[in-house]
Picture: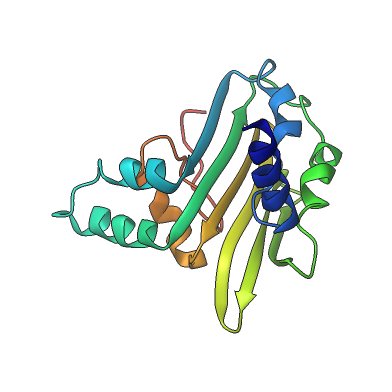
Length: 178
């Protein structure tokens, strides 16, 4: 049994699919809020089952989930700045290299200290086999990986699944009470 587990783990690593996000676990003790999502196969379908097929936005998410094989999220919010550096993400970025992964978006704001990177995993001609997002600002760090058939425009809709944070690309509206 143990040998079979090792085989499946090595197969996953060799296929270039699931990212190893364990290096981020060290931030949990420093964070005021953490999110850790690991949904795949039947668990992913079950999470989507909590959504209503009667509501248009939830029906859209159910349709998106049909093409997915896994959703993985690590998100940390800190009470103060300086709990992590951009270099702390080098281990994650080193896994997101061509030919398997291609960075398609990189946004950095010197003014707000925010940055976002989006990577795409191509599986064939005109097919996307997954997306990875690294988003950070002074007090928040989030890494999301979605495997399976997905469009970038669908990424934000996945936040309707319980436990998955709202990950939107582009400028955010600042909360007035911060």
